[in-house]
Image 1: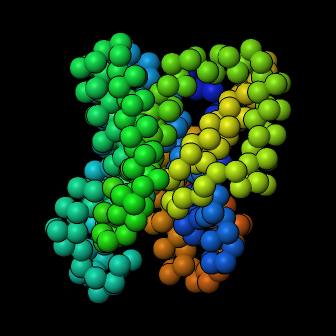
Image 2: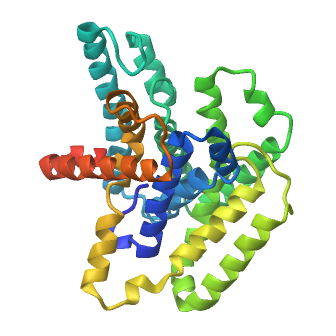
Length: 335
């Protein structure tokens, strides 16, 4: 989710927009049978993780403290403030109206758990938790091992996959509560994907793709279709396993291959940049929005159109919020 504007690839921006909608569908779709079917193709988190760390590589190589500091600000501001807003507003609502989204008073312990593991009363924050932890870890490794840091991380990725395919992977976390299972368990799943993203970024992948964009689009599409139709990998739950990583790479290549940046059209570029903005705010707010749609507007069933409504409302609130506080660092709540 974190990307410097100078590095934005419009095809990847479109992918981020689609992934945001995909997340809303998985979290909010009322048809449980259909939602479960869609969840089997849960590449949204691996793709977001790949994108985020793909664009971290140059920062790790430069080891510029100011840029690294800015990265943490972009992550910590939404990670800390969104749960705090929910905690305060929910408790005020419960005190005044004796009801809130959780039908109980949220304790300080609830807030502490939420901040410690990124999960508790606002589950989506676990992903930002993983970005913060991985970024900190990768920065430390890059400063210690310098030009050899990628090799060290590659070894760690191999070890991570070994754990995933052993009894200490998914099964190990079954014994923990939802907060730990849904946070640390998912972190173990996405850790090697983050490292793979760094490695592919070191190959200057996007420039290579642009030089051969027709072949990249065709081959990635064919391979995505083949893997989708054939079980050539051992399927592991959640975001575990090689299949998630391999499909994530192909999806990234497919969208990064679109030569949108080369089209000489200011209007087209403006439209794409506009409609693909505020994915941070959309991701952080969508569960809040769906609560109010269900409870206050009596929407009983949320279909694909309903998910689009949630996306658009989240986008609009993010747009207004950015216009109000966009000149401060609080802008990171939305972008």
